[in-house]
Image 1 (tube, helix red, strand yellow):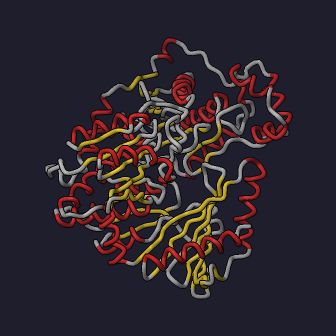
Image 2 (cartoon, rainbow, N blue to C red):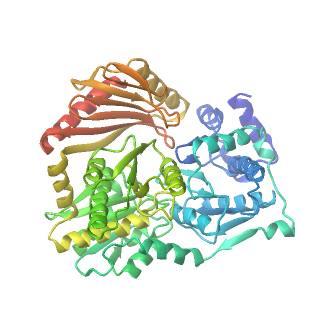
Image 3 (cartoon, rainbow, N blue to C red):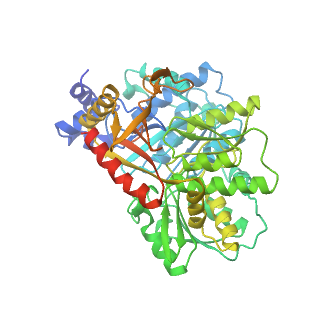
Length: 563
């Protein structure tokens, strides 16, 4: 059926959620096409999309369709008695989707554990490990705008489903021809399969987060942290953890309500500077040393640092490098560095962190974007003990310090950044001083990104066209610098020293990466969760000025190449 036919099936079906009828009746031709031209898809972080009516939207019918496919996979692998843990954030319909998911799975005879109220994504990962569940579901759209919601699936290790498993679930989802026919009526026995999670998991999670501290007994009276959960799930856990650890925390009060409209923030995304506006006001009023900002589901954390009287907002690459320097230096000092230590980051994460790890003898392994790939590697080495995990991070503000969780964990990162800030302040240094020392020692890098936003069906086709054009016509130079090597994760080909070889150990992905003669690189990929084409830059220079000057030239060159 074409988009118009599917639209009329929804409009005229007695099973269509009554809350969606008015929206359907008021759609114009373009809105009909965008809502029904394709099914909402699983990306790097699960199924994510705009809330509303249609097969390309997040609504009760597309959530049930996803659950029906997941249920088939659970039953096929005898996971019904181990059960599924379910969490949710503050977004519109999150709680409704979570509890409907529990009931829907119960109608298949599948046990569930559902949080009584909203919780962070990392705590969902922790909870399913705590209960030894078969898997998990998190209802969230992470840092996306208020119009979005989403659905993430987890395996028994607390890791987001890797592509080989996710593809199997998706194949089962795609077998369902009529999502409007999916309904349930529970028996008393099926109702008993739904278990509500209270604060018992919270306390165990807090205890584990507190265990990551290196300088547990240092004097903490010298620093003050301003914190914003951006209306999301981080508010309670971060405050509890800081209270138990003894750190002073001042909340951005207007942003502590669990508001699905994000009314008091310019952006819930810590990758955007406007997310810090109110926090900076609070920080200046209280002379705070540190600003911490979490996204709504508390897997990402952004950082602002008081340095020379001004607040400097750090990128994810920069905060990651500072965490690496602090954690690994403490491990070395305290004799806690294991044999064969390994750190994980992604093919689009900047080089500074890897250089910092190298000086402590820590190997870096690369994965594709998506923390599930890091979680997969953690699980692998946990089994064979070939290497010992010491840190994992992405450039997009996500990191994992201790793998009792298998996803990005902002509360852990918040605690460790506060500890590092306190530790270095005793040495009369700020975190920016630490970063500058790394630049002086390891080289000057500017690690940044730009995005091309293209919405709807036309946008999706244009993004595909941009990637395909670069794949067919790979540049020989960018900004006047010769391309000396390239990697294409869509074809598993890489070019170096005049030879084309095969990339091994990766899942197929539309990522192109170009290495330049000056030690810089540029990568491009379509976002798996937003209508964007992302371009990543890791630009190396002999000085901060030179590196920053070169960035603008590289950006201008990429604008021309992606027209």
